[in-house]
Structure formats: structure tokens, C-alpha cells
Image (tube, rainbow, N blue to C red; front, side):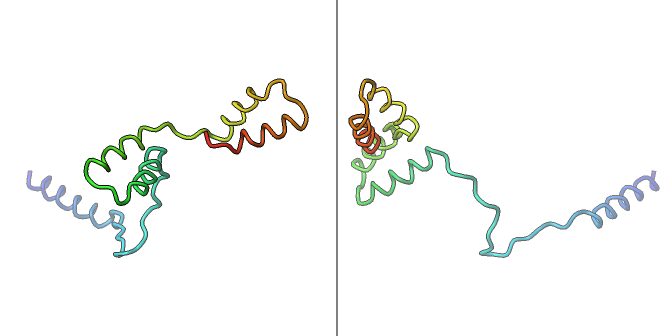
Length: 106
């Protein structure tokens, strides 16, 4: 029994000696790159910046409305919507309509 116990202790000590060294990071050194922000995180950053100067209930109400606002349309969604609205227009009329439609904030 003693031989088995001694073998286990010796085995565990030798395993520790051959284990991969633990990487240490110097203070202030950059670590792994952070993951890309989600849409909600980006929205939070924007709303937080817009809420500067507001305090208490005013800030709380502003943040609630800002974060629950629908996301702006993507360029592809705008194109789709403007194309539907431009049905029946041709030539310069369509061109000017599309220009104003795509540049409008939606």
C-alpha cells in the first residue's frame, strides 16, 4: 500500500513539473481583443452619450425611450422602400425622387 501511495505522490509531482507554464500578463499590457459590440451595446453607448447632463428621473425616462426606439433603416432597406415608392416614375423624375428618398432620414 505504501508503494502505491509513494508512486501516486511521485507521479503527481512529475506531472506538475511537465505541465505547461501559466502565461502571465504584465500590468497595463493589452489582452485578447474584445468581441465586437452587439447592436444593443452600440445603442447603449449612443443613448448614454446623448443623455449627458440629464439626471434622475429625466435621465431614466430618456434612456428608456432612446433604447426602445426602433433601429434606423439600413441602406438596403431604404433602397427597397424607395423603389416601391418610385413605381411609375421614369427618367429624371425617378432619379431625383430616389436621391431625395435615400438621403432622407427614416
